[in-house]
Image (cartoon, rainbow, N blue to C red; front, side, top):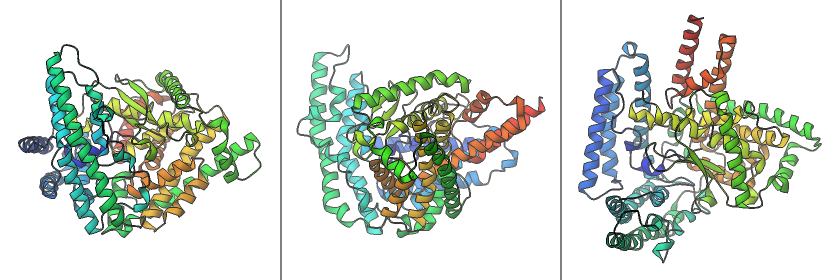
Length: 582
């Protein structure tokens, strides 16, 4: 999974996906008109927040209603467009624009905006990302301090949403919260220099006068102690005295208002298909059975005579596959990433300009975070993209899965795909900043499979690690539906994932918490990967000697992040065009 869909931006509404149209506009007049209206609406919202001194955005219920009414009207205007008269490019634009709008409408109609937290993220966790900003001018520092001073107001508005959610039964399961306190308690400090928000003040920019710098640091320290710390204190008080005592004890979303209807809508959103959750469940069972047979072949190869569960139990504690230090883990991940860099020209004709680095997961998130993620950066920012590796609880970070993890999160997975999308000059801007999980996560999982073509997984244990990651995503189809539609409890889900994969028990726990908190998202990976593999097989079979894997991969990435039906349309056109020129 990636951190590209910044949760902080999601809580601010549609502004994360639809922004100013600096790139090329669609040909169709109605699509162009709607995008222009969205741009005007966003500018009005920005000016409104500015006039209210709300640089972090306004998050009251009336704000969500106002946005909902606007986006509903925009979607209605798009719904009457005659798609038969659209160009190929505008068919894609229309599908993706409506996809984005429909997500916003669902968020309001099912009142999910009243639940702005996940098991490992929330409205507050992305605030800390401000501390990584690279600032250089007096104005940039002043704007940063203004944001710090806005934290208590921003926090209180989100806490009020959560209070309303509690009253309506729209909240997260209590079972996911052990360890969650790390996301706010680490930011309650007695010395501003110990705050993550102090980082931009740690070094004076070149060319700034001592007098200006002294005033900036003084104002920054005051903003941290009086407002940033205050906001996180209020979060702790809220969780301790209001949320945790009252939130639900059930696991699945089916126990919430309109729960099953909401879950089916999420299945549609995250798979971008019309599959029912029962159909998804059956695909999962079939994949679990297929992958288990491949796992058994590895057991035979290494001469293990026990059961699959016994082999998995042994792997989890075998010191050969556990890093001794955080530095060892980071160096191994970096080495794999650099090896992958060197293999990219074998499989891709076009590579991104934006570099990426390898960093540990931030300490405040690490205890409840997954083994690794991709943290993207805007293409014009002063930061590169980053592959995050979790160095917390080293006994849970298995080296036999590290190749698959790296290929998914760094290259040729998320960094390559997301950076290329941002660099595509033929796309309207809203598509450069869009992320469709079925495509992005399906691509990441497909890239784990590409490791075989890149020369990875030479060792049977790393091969078992790749199969474990494949099985993990297959299990998600079973477990996610089990929790949210079949009323599985947490223990059932834990047992299923622990018995079928060699993920560490710590990772099994954080994964199940994530599925409970984020209905449907876990379905995207395997659904997207199966579609990509099916389309590659179709291309190979129909094009035969004309098939070029570099050309095929460049094609898949040429339109940015897309729904699976768009991807199929792209591949069908590619095959037809190739055969026509034979």
